[in-house]
Image (tube, rainbow, N blue to C red):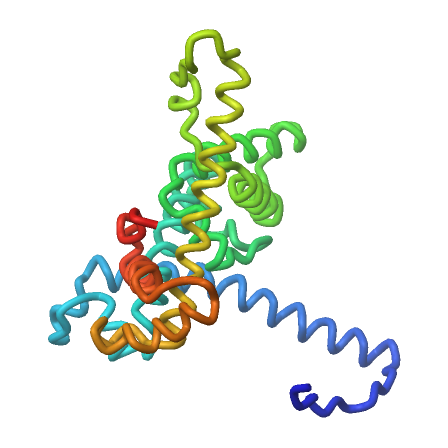
Length: 260
């Protein structure tokens, strides 16, 4: 049994103190929501300005590790966050007006994990956001949407996309199926297969992150192999697979795990 943290006994407060604490909590939540967009904007500006070159670093990942004290994998997740925020701002500015394009996060915290799951699907996300904004505008009788309604529409689009298998619509439409196989059933199988393939990629990435926790990214593969061999035996994998997944987690390139 792990050590349990000491918890102070509960002390009920009166209504006035409850309202004060709720107000402070609400303010903190709003600060977090604002920080997401501010962070995305600053990451975008730093990357576009190639700040690592001016400061003598060979890459964005090396710069982030040295100057921001975050891992290389986190550094590239921040870029994904910035790209997602930019895509959302573009469609919100187009659909709801430029004055609200920087206020979409009023009702939304965009989790980094969500961005990782939908990266590479930003065009699909933009289409979904546009659809949800159109629906919200119709519900509002054509009136201009407030930031809270925009945030709710964006949140709904992100949740819907995360729940969809990553199957391009054009690919599903063109899936002809074997001779004699019902076309709709074939398309359903294709969609299911894509979903399973996506789950496999997620599992590979999680294995890679696990390997990085055991052997950080700055350690050479030849030095990491022995430790990952031991880990692989414990979890039913192999050093070769864990090294491949580690490369995937470091680079974001799924081709690193094509053999598995």
